[in-house]
Image (cartoon, rainbow, N blue to C red; front, side, top):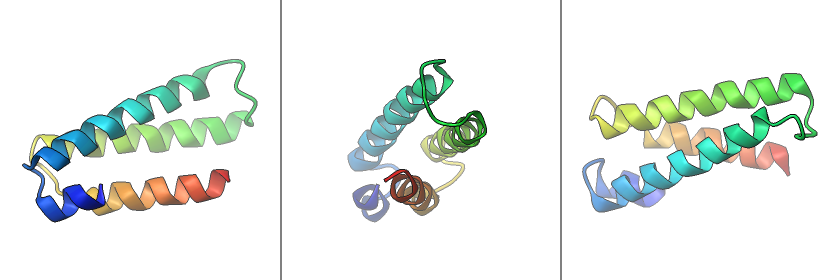
Length: 84
């Protein structure tokens, strides 16, 4: 996402970053929805809500309604650091 920010939302890097981000978050949300997921239900629900925001924001960037790569990067960093 950092490279995509520098290259611009219409760059190949942006397209690849958004595609990768969508794939990861869709898989993450699917895992969070699974009954086998061991995280507390309220945490899972919160993470799913965040994931939906990430997916919507990525779509807004893709459709040139936003260029908020930094917002997505910040959220991903916070989630990553919080789950460690």
